Length: 224
Image 1 (tube, one colour):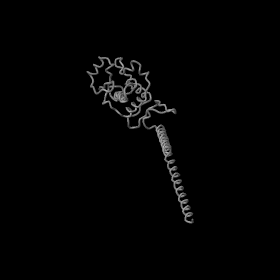
Image 2 (cartoon, one colour):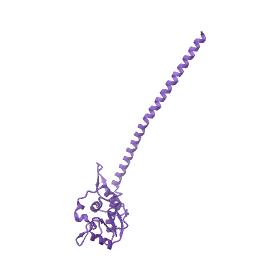
Image 3 (cartoon, one colour):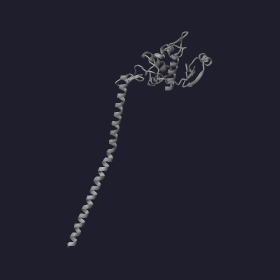
Image 4 (cartoon, helix red, strand yellow):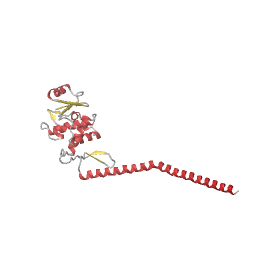
């Protein structure tokens, strides 16, 4: 009888130990699963904090750029983040300075001549204008180059047909002109360009006879 009681007591303790073991196992598993479930949320929150921190750093850098007046300065941002053409000031020792009025002329002639071209095509047109400014055979300013006339004939067709005044300057044109004014030149010294598909045959004959063909990009052929 005594042995039977001891047996029941041992069995009860054993069952109690099993119960406590499994209860503890499931509690630990629940905690682990909960931590795993919330881990992506934690990572996402950290990622958002990183993004906000980086955005703040860039904003501070841009504010510093505006305050010091260094860098390209070809465009600024309004509070609504809309890009507007403002002024242009190169760092000393690069290509010098270009006044606001001259910048607008360059942007407009690039847009009107190469609005349908890619950014490199726009860059090339800007290069040609700036090459002429630096060449003794042409006027000394962007405005004088763009509006130059030879025996009453304009050098750039958008001046003649008026499209120069109607264009809306694109972000890509701003970028291309910025690259050109910072010294990037992919034109191989080109001083002329023409769209053979739309040009007068006699005009293209003069190009082919009197100029050196350099290369073709997009719809334009470039010469010097």
